[in-house]
Image 1 (cartoon, rainbow, N blue to C red):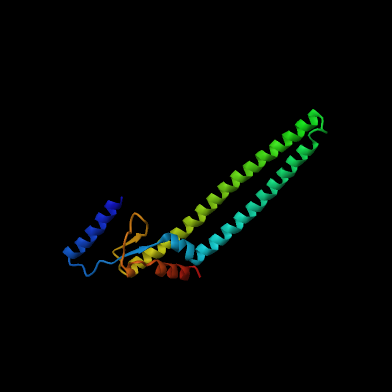
Image 2 (spheres, rainbow, N blue to C red):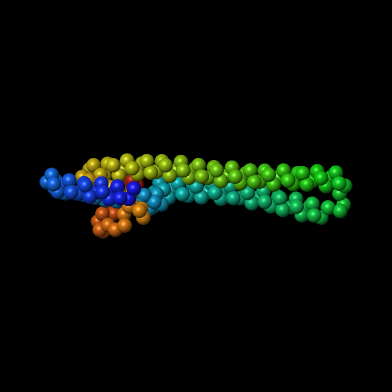
Length: 171
């Protein structure tokens, strides 16, 4: 993939020279930075973290309840009849399953919410990038990643510019 991208960039550059194009303009953006530093990204992260805290609090309460039940079982172990002890153990095991299910469901909810928020912001960022690319005559705008942009001159990184433009569109 990296070789294909590099070949495409080289062809664009060579094609521009061969056909007498005025200038080949290349830029790149760090989408992760844009997600983290844009106003929408910060708001989404705050909302996500709030939900994480809510779910963590609920899970902590369930774990506290489980610990109390376990302590009760240990204290009353010798005092309860086998049937009563069996019933309490059954209740305890059911509450463990409920807590595990809640934790799993919470994890899935958080993953889904994160994906939704990220997808929406990236879609909007791509729209801003396309507009900027057209308006400012970019030949190509790449996404920064370890496999794609290993080096670029100072002015080629347009991340901050995109964040500012994106923030303006969301006000």
